[in-house]
Amino acid sequence: MPDPTEDTEFTRRAAHYLDQVAERGQEVVVQRAGRPVAVLISAADWADWQRLRSRRQMHFRHDLALIHQAAEEAAVVNSFSEDQARDAAKQAQMVGRSRLRSEETGRGVELDLPHFGPPLPWEDSDASGPGTVPRTMLDAHLLLTYLIGGGKETRALLDTWAEGQVELLVPRFLLLDLRGGLDALAEQGRLDPEAGECLLELLVREGAAVADPLLPPGFRPGPRARLN
Image (cartoon, rainbow, N blue to C red; front, side):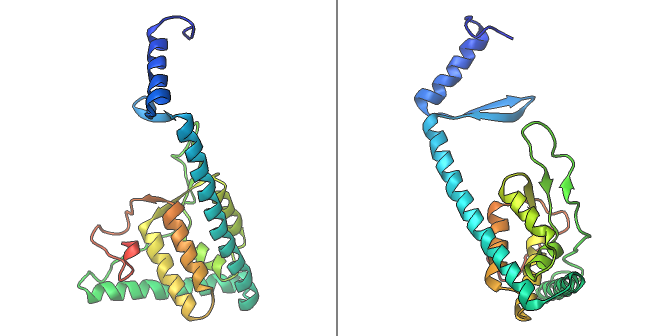
């Protein structure tokens, strides 16, 4: 490793990058093997980023607390056993999917769309290495079950996401599936509609959007434009 006190090409380049950051306020992206691994930013930008991060985390926590409270209240109101909660969530999923298919068929889209596949794996094994966190996908059935008072393990998963210990991947079909199930359960009086909307917004805002291999590019989720 070069001696940092020596006038070498290494130290000259390092000094140049630090000047860019400190004097000009520019960001410097550090790459390794063609991939970004770090970013050098100024102290002022760091302070701004910390403030933004703190406000974002407070917003995240506030929304998640509302969701948890609604789930606790639903558990009391519905008085479901675990199996009953899972069954009710599955039935709502089926109703929501049927409605989506009917809407698209009425607009000239093929009858077999959308194709909802089996639950995705919970962890992405490709997300490994220094500085990375595990990447996870949650099934809509799991989230619906939690919102009506079952699936207590989901609370810990959501808290882990809020703490930054996992990255939640959100394909568009998850939002579609969840949207349909939430509407069906709200009509039955099984959950707090505000909490359902809050969860959808949280997934969109804080989740990592990923390509959806199960839906064709031309598929549209219907009248709720924010999911398009």
